[in-house]
Figure 1 (cartoon, rainbow, N blue to C red):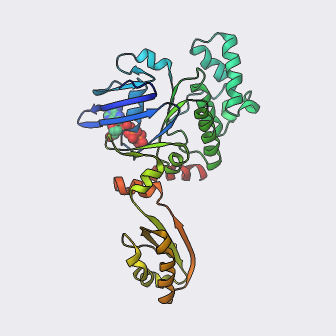
Figure 2 (cartoon, rainbow, N blue to C red; figure 1 turned 45 degrees about the vertical axis):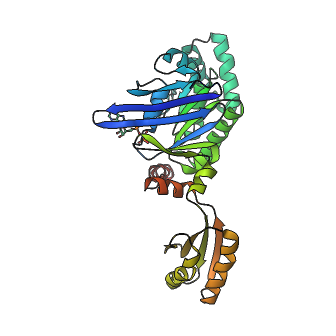
Figure 3 (spheres, rainbow, N blue to C red; figure 1 turned 90 degrees about the vertical axis):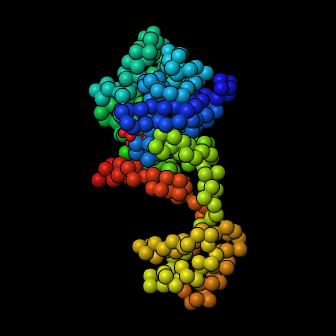
Length: 328
Ligand code: ATP
């Protein structure tokens, strides 16, 4: 299994807490220099898998190699080659960004001069050069996360584990963190990213593994996963809310599933097999039925719809809550 172009390989991982299997036959393979998004609802086993792969937790069964080394037999070698950004910030609030990075460099056994040089480079790379001398308590959430990323990348690890790196950040900060992650991958780093934000996985990951109750239940590129539930979506906004039922009935024969009505948006959604014939036909049918349309869109399924299809529930409940907390 130690294929040279794979940065992470895990087979049949098991981890048990009492009667609960946090991981129950978890498999994953991640090619070097790519981002793998590990998506799953609360309690699915995301953090447990990251903790096992980063050698913080012992596995009860299965095996895993990270950066070419077995996590159970050679944890020392694995640790030299990985970085980890957990859910809570590891940086010191009172120190400046620069001082934090020098401190981390010293903890990682860099000499004083080397730690200072590396700290300066990292501030530059993570777009913190202008604020490097300010205390971290003056930083925004996004700046702190970028400083976390910088600290975890001080030794230029081959594999970086990011456990929900943008939870609670506002959209602009999330974009900044995403850009830093893209830069890292551009330089060859392999990233395993756990997230409940579907758009985050869509934006960053070339491969997505959906995890539920301790095992991977689906994997593929974002596009492949969207194709799995089949078809495109045509959505109509009707002018008169009372026409929703009649409109859905008019277009129902075009759909490969029952049309879905959203009363608040005055919208009818139809999943169709062939958009090129279904779209003009739907317009004709609604026109024939005398139903006025305010708007019409054609789109592919979202990852959240894929997630709902696979797991029976939406992925972003907690993520939305975190956004509300930030904007409140
Ligand atoms: P979240 O997004 O909420 O962090 P997760 O996908 O990361 O969820 P894990 O934290 O890996 O999930 O937890 C997987 C399961 O294992 C859950 O049922 C959780 O309650 C359980 N679990 C995790 N850590 C422990 C522990 N130290 N003791 C007992 N049970 C645990």
